[in-house]
Image 1 (cartoon, rainbow, N blue to C red):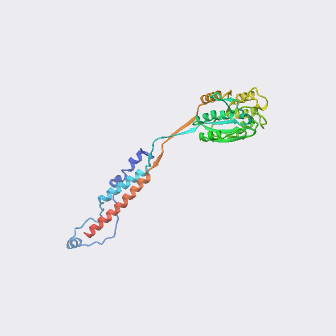
Image 2 (cartoon, rainbow, N blue to C red):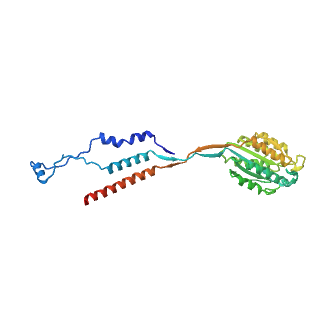
Image 3 (cartoon, rainbow, N blue to C red):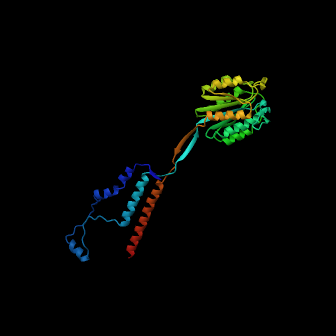
Length: 329
């Protein structure tokens, strides 16, 4: 489809302008010096010529008229800004940032987590399967991944490349970040990472199987700061609430974190329960996408200007050829 940037009224006004000038504006005349002869008529008769008026307006050939009309039409159409408009293109932009904070401390190596097939499996392995499926279904969101043990690290910054996030999650191993659990520091790192995001809707999902040990910032304080920054936190516990020491799941802290940051707390005793939790989160926090549409445009003005120049060139060439023919005839 072809569209013009300039109003169509511009074309209607400019196209007939040469005709208006031709009929309304008088022809250009010039005064030149002349010699007056009293016997001019007899002199003209002697040489066999017919006297003509002193002022002559030269007529234009058909080639000149047609070429001038085409050049003017092409120039006016180019001035109107013609564009070729393509089919609509729909762009989808993530409207929510989702960060996953996964505990990979030493306790995640315990093989007490019941898989969907009934066999006991490593806690982290079950988490990787469930969270990996959750990530794959979040098309439209930007996902980031934090892993934490004795230290917290950004494993994957915010990205819409979900396959890369899932691959990085699968490559994570127990103990990579140390044996302990710095839950508060992981939330603090998440807050810092969110600060580089311009998206207002922010969600942090924290999964841990133990109590906080040695964070520079307490989990509750970190959750309060996150809430002020508009970050909602959902916490998931996968450990043993009846354990002891660092192996004991601190459900009270996880509940307080979620309550402080406008979120929810869930406990998963096996892989099926964990999968059900992420399914509920997916329904509770549906994917948010901002959609925009545009039509690609390609300017055609240069084509019309090239046609105008070519028409003028070939008209001059044709007039020169016709003049030489008449001269040689």
